Length: 368
Ligand SMILES: *[C@@H]1O[C@H](CO)[C@@H](O)[C@H](O)[C@H]1NC(C)=O
Image (cartoon, rainbow, N blue to C red; front, side, top):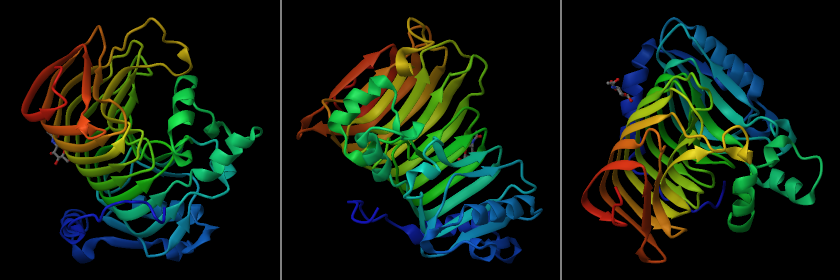
């Protein structure tokens, strides 16, 4: 990710200490360095097994645990950080860079890169995550034998191949969270071909602070509502995030089909958008490939979503888009101090089935 135009992340030290005290009360935390499990900071050696082994030990620890990733570059395939664990305070402290294999075939067929599942109380602090999208894109351009990861849903394909930089045209998510409670991500820079952070069903009490995202698809709650019986998402805070050249900024996305899922009590606060295609978006009509959902409406109920102090530039005219379910309109959407421009002019907002209120300066003019 060298050369990405990401701004300096403010106050890393202060934030580091917050995490430090919250998650590793001094000498009590058991320490696991990925180096002692054979990880190599040379950017080439596959360190997947070492990370998995360090996680297994940290997860089995009955006292709080810290996994440290020192400076240097670590090549990582897909890693599943899976619970349940024996403690509720695992800190993954990354001082270096995690790099997806440049040979995209290694995880080309895996949609997700770093997956956290069924864990209570995990914090990821620091680090640069480099999803390395370029290789897969050239394969896709050359035509044959690319992994599935290269194939985008039809609807998006046309749009993206025209307007996106190559790195973003690959399907690979950096962080994925499913069935998680009490996760914190702090001070990370994430570049990937898909979502920088993907927040799946059953996630609650997630705190993301001081994250720089780009290239990638932004921070996404969803896709939700793929299943008819599905756990909801609640109490998610995304605070102080910078998006640079991403497809989306802050997104909530659900399938356009019946489900009992929901997303509620979501706070998006202090975000800067630099040339983002869809800075603020709720899309409840997700239907990739137009299969198994056309003509249906999303059952996912979205409520109490606040956007506070969001500013910057949109790469498209419509910077705020709430496309909610016809059957279950979005409720309690709040826009406070939002200022998004398109080509240095006020951008536009579009609403369907969305209710709520706007306060402070809101530009584009709210359509709630
Ligand atoms: C919401 O999540 C935060 C952490 O992100 C936690 O401190 C807080 O207690 C949670 N609130 C509720 C009502 O669960």
